[in-house]
Length: 513
RNA sequence: ACCGGGGUAGCUCAGUUGGCAGAGCAAAGGAUUUUUAAUCCUUGAGGCGCGGGUUCGAUUCCCGCCCCCGGUACCA
Image 1 (tube, helix red, strand yellow):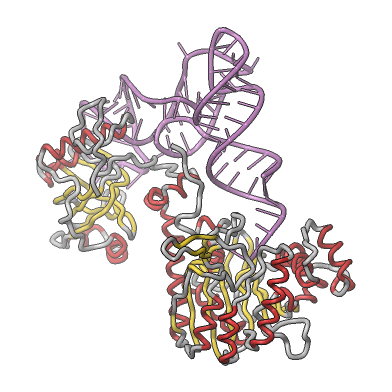
Image 2: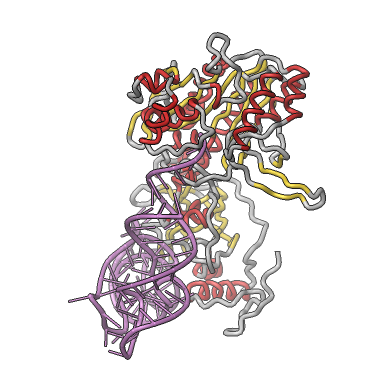
């Protein structure tokens, strides 16, 4: 990258690429940087290589007493990090440096590093990155400290960090400048480390069971696989409208038709809908498909998978989420959809079968319905209001109505319901799994119903996907598939109330100049 | 989209029933070789989210707008 060639008119900058800046703190830092450069100190060298990390040092030496540390004075450590605090005493100073693994106090004294290096050190600011080398010792208060014998500037920082005590708390700034958030707030770092642990735990779990990770189109001609409004985009050379996928489902099942039998995709979906503490327009979903399995097999897998993630980041299956206990120990509760409406939602029995009663109740609860909405959709709306928030402990709901499940296999005994479950933890939907509908003629009819709903004004209804039906005509083996919201799982396991706290760069409106 | 809360120094926050805009930390200069939000002295730092209006005078009152947070609606 080249700097901004526009030169400051107010003051002749030492660095001609430096932009005009009327903020005094940044000017002061530029001034110090200029002095360092004039003294022949490179501001952005790429020569220093740390050999140790702070976490490793602490793990090994945190328990060692002062005299033992003293006896190993010849053992030197080489660390790189950002200066987070600086307490100067004239001829010596304590600094706190932070690397990716933690932070450590260092002691810099003129007598040790020499006149010249100490003069360099005096020009450094909090926020600068340095490399240090030296042995460990303990201070009067027994804090493990690195005695700096040599140091070098690794990267100059032109902007001041937030204050050390309160740090950065402004939510907007934290999201817009996530890098600052990560520098200042270790608990935020921990959240994203946990997120990474969860994702790799999921991958390991599936790979151990011979699932193959695949990538299917995010830009799709026909947005299928979920009831949601898509984002639209346009390909210039091909001259065609494309949609960002709302789900990878239909492509993954084509792969099962192709014989891959066990596939998963762990990646982004895009839904053009509202934003809330539980919804971001782009979000991460695990979808996996398993031939020769049914939805009940998936329920077992779900319990295992979520439990392993919990063990990986919490080390326990019982923990608190937002002050209330969650117990992930299997088996999880299991309710029939209609039963849950009666027993948890307290709905009168006739609502389950009488369209008018259901519609009246849903509207009473604030539901908005189109004339095309069937009984299943109305009951589901009631479920969302009366039942879902009550499902704090992990719970499977089964026996979903057929008309809100256009890709699920119809139940063999009751043709009004499908072989599907959703599971809920902490009052919110975490995932959705079902035995796949693999009868092509049945699937074609379901698509037609969806198209009719779309024509009746339901923008979330699906499109007809003729190629998908053609694929089914070749034969999809009996298969079960599941989608699991990774962001929500991370929220649960990191005890975060908002999805934005588990997404590094949540979508925000542009900030104004 | 609607309802509520918020936007003041680099950061965390006070404040003005309309009268030169404040603190702590951070910063600059000085003192200081064991600090832990180090301490002491001195100093500087601000378009009070943006644009209009009322007024002798607006950060404060009025109107419009922008951004963030929470809730409702849509959804996972």
